[in-house]
Every structure is written in structure tokens, then in C-alpha cells.
Image (cartoon, rainbow, N blue to C red; front, side, top):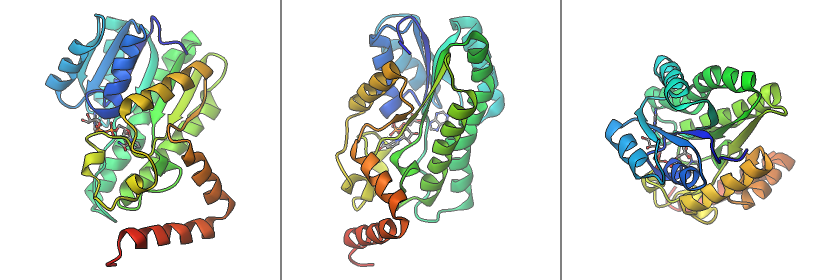
Length: 260
Ligand SMILES: NC(=O)c1ccc[n+]([C@@H]2O[C@H](COP(=O)([O-])OP(=O)(O)OC[C@H]3O[C@@H](n4cnc5c(N)ncnc54)[C@H](O)[C@@H]3O)[C@@H](O)[C@H]2O)c1
């Protein structure tokens, strides 16, 4: 996938990683970048500040299936065929085991939103035999996130869905990627507690470095995008010996929470 001349849609595009992706796609020569986010003013402001012209900001809750269907129709009709879809919006709701509403929101945004997008975007890409569909999951989806159970569990769902889509619909024409960063300096990370294992586990990357990793992966049609390369090693250790990995994670939790 080469973004030059393509219509790129970035959900959660008004902040953090999505914002960096939107800027990068515009700079790299996308024909139009569609910035999708909850707040209409912020989505429009980001679209207006991107390099070049023809970009669009849309206020859509990606967890609303009717709104997603209407948005895809509108982009395809008004802007043009979608070449690159980045299903990136995410929420870090609910500490620990959290409340039912946190689980529902996390499931809706981290799993169902990608399903709704896939239902409407993929048939078009498959009919054209071209396009790329990326899901932003997280290293939490390959490992865990010790502070937020709904986040950890539903991000495993994001990874599983991305794998399923790539197996079922991937091929010569349509590509799939799953972006799994660890800590990235965004407003979401600012909500993490000071004793967060995510920040203790490795470098906190700037969102622009995540955009670098995405551009490299798009160029090589790579499925799993790991801006923090050490995550591959953690995932290998987890699958090689789950009991040892859990003991190590318990020790990490205890070292970060000496009072517990
Ligand atoms: N920051 C990190 O350390 C980190 C690490 C791994 C994965 N991620 C993932 O990266 C993605 C982007 O996160 P970020 O760190 O840039 O966070 P962020 O909070 O800066 O940006 C997320 C954006 O998504 C939007 N959003 C949330 N729910 C939405 C919805 N229902 N509909 C439309 N827009 C919605 C928010 O308004 C916000 O603008 C998320 O999926 C997140 O889980 C982040």
C-alpha cells in the first residue's frame, strides 16, 4: 500500500496516534484524509490543519453502526473510493475489574467498531481488489494491561479480529495490518497511573515514531506492526511458558505496588 493519491480514513484522528497518522498520510501525498472523531469542531480543525487540501473532518461515534454505515457511504460518494482505512479510535475506560458500562464501551469501541467498519468498507475494497484495512490494537492485546481489565481483554479481541479478517479476506488485492504499540505519549497515556506497568515496560514513544512504523509496514504489507520491537520478545516468552510469564508479571505488579 502506497498512500500517494489514496483516500485515507483515520478514526480517532483528532488526537494522539490518529492525529500523527492523519498528518503523516497528508504529508506523504494522500489525495484526501478523512479525520473521524467524536467532537465535530476538533475533527474539522484537524482536517483543516493537514498539509494539502481536500481533507474532511467528520464527527462519528465509531461504536454506532448506523452512523458508521452512513459515514462510509458519504466518504465514498463525496470524497472517493477509500484506499486506506485505519480503525484507530480507542478508550481507556475503567480501572481494575471496572464497571459493566466500562466493559460495554471497551467492547463496542475495540471490537464492534472494527466489525461495523469492516462490514461496510471491505465489500467495496474487495470489489475493487485493492485497499488496506488497519486496526490499532495494542501490546495489551498480545500481552496484557495490568491496570485495566476491560482494555486488556477487549484489545485481545481487536488482535483476534484483525487476524481473522486477514485470514478470511486478505489476499493479493486487499491488505490488513494490526498495530500493537506499547506506551505512546498521547492524552490516553496521560490518564495512566504513575505506577503503570505499560510505561515501566519500555520506552514511551512519540506518536510520530508510531506513524514511521505504520508507513514502513504499509510499504512491506506487514500484518503485525510493533513500534516497540521488544514486544515481540515478550509475546514469545508468554507463549513459550505461560506460567513463567504470569509469575514474572506478578513480580512486576508487586514491584510497582509495594504496598499491596
Ligand atoms: N497511547 C498509548 O500508549 C497506546 C498504546 C497502545 C495502543 N493504543 C491505542 O491507540 C489508539 C489511539 O490511542 P491514543 O493513545 O492516540 O489515544 P487518544 O485518547 O489520544 O486518542 C483517541 C481518540 O479516539 C477518539 N475516540 C474514542 N472513542 C471514539 C468513538 N467511539 N468514536 C470516534 N472517536 C473516538 C477520542 O475522541 C480521541 O480523539 C487507541 O486504540 C489506543 O487504545 C494507545
